[in-house]
Length: 289
Image (cartoon, rainbow, N blue to C red; front, side, top):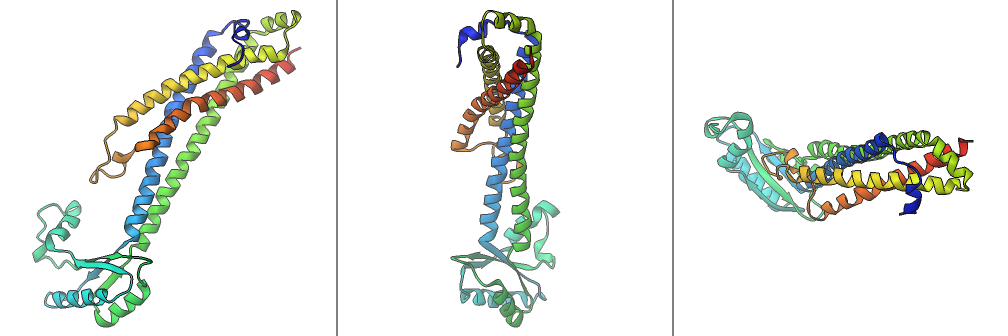
């Protein structure tokens, strides 16, 4: 907290006060959204990884009269395959639901040559995909296994990188906050050059003078950061809730205990302001005769 008396010996400058509060508030607002993005993409990466890693699909393409026989043969093979928890053939309604986003709700599945899909759920360490492919190619020529690997890896990698970009954005926001507060502190020190000279004449040490500026800018940053965090928290809270049909953007926000991260942002803004003002004040006072 410093010495409140030291804060009173230096007259405040109007534009630096508003600049510091506004900068801290704006950067805290952006930091909340960057943090929400990082956490949302983290949840997305975990969900995609866990859901796709435990399921596979077998597609059976064969003449209409052979699809039923090949489907039954495939299911029989899966029953004796180690690592397969369950396997079932999707009915026409389920296949229609999968194709509906692309072809509309009135797709005549029964009259179109659509392959039969079999959903495979893994257990334990999973099954040997290479061995299962060889067995299917030998016994069920029309069956093709898709273990989702080629789809899972790019999706999980993209979500993980997006989460990393969110964390990098938070670091850049902190750096920009420090730069703006440093500029404001230097402007305030320059505007009070004569006051600093008088204080030195009456015996005030540079550490005492610096404390006045440090305390003032730290409290301003704490105030601005708190206002920006509350505003951003309300904005995130008002975003649409996560929906299965809404995609990724409807899940942007915080879940449960993650809201506690908002309590860290105002003190963090104050800490950045403290360090930046301390460095700027000591350097300026050292260079001022």
